[in-house]
Length: 470
Image (tube, rainbow, N blue to C red):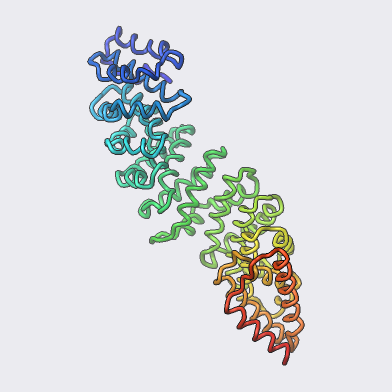
């Protein structure tokens, strides 16, 4: 860090030398957390050298201390936050402003209550305006400060957006990209990603198209894990919010980033990157037929198979199965792409038998969604793939919701009807379903599991039993 570069030229040489020498004199070994009040008095002194000493001492304390909570509390109790913000608003000394923002950045990385103090005294606009600085070191500190504040509380995040912070960060980041300042672009992308996340979602509809283009560009150009993690999650948050005029899924496709996302999904070994990529692809697969076909034509089923085969992480398996169920919720040709992929279908059945209920219910959706569109000849293929066992098991799971149960029962009824059209009778397969259901119920009784039967089930069971008897 070149401190001399941002020290104002109007400061006399002898004063300048004293100030710069303090960076050599003040270190972790000689700053004292017990005299923060004295450092606070120095900051408020009329002597510029003393002012600087107090700022650097406080910054060193809060940046390097093993117990930053207590240091932060002491800074707050000594009423330093409004004084630091006053420096941002009234002081032309860029070095002092740099040190003040650094301290406020560290305060904002503390508890919510501590960050609230910074916001309460007007920290957001006072820090944000220095994003226009000609000094990159100051821009860097603003990024850290706003990123911390945005991540702390959705209300603080909203304030930053409302005060134009989101647009300013995008503009600055694009300027930095033109200057090839990769390190600072990465930091900007982290700050912007913090402004795009949180529950409830931020109100960023008017920026959505700009954000999709921005993060797609970052993902295309940067390969380090940290930047990809932040950018992929940000793009996922945006793609998951479709409550405006812009269709985020189509806009993501339009940027041309999907092949890169699928490549990352295939090759990355970092779960924090893989997860948002699966979510983005899964969200696009909830879209229209053209969007789903686009993803399918990028060989996504082969990538899903590779990931399913090579991960033990149940939460990731569940996300991929959810994405596949979105495909089978599509048209007949899309369903056939899944059913005809023997690798996927064989692996799904194996996973169903070995996975937890969260994964099992997602796999069941793959099958029940497919039943809505398939032709007669595909019915037997699904039976051979174990659909009766999957449906019987899912009906008995404690976590299976009523909506899914009803969907499975309708799918079974449709399946039996198709068999009757093919062979004239469905009795053999109804009996097979009840045998599997009985086996599962017996296992549940042995394990003292509760019976999880809903009223509508009995109506279907009675209907099917009557078909057998007749």
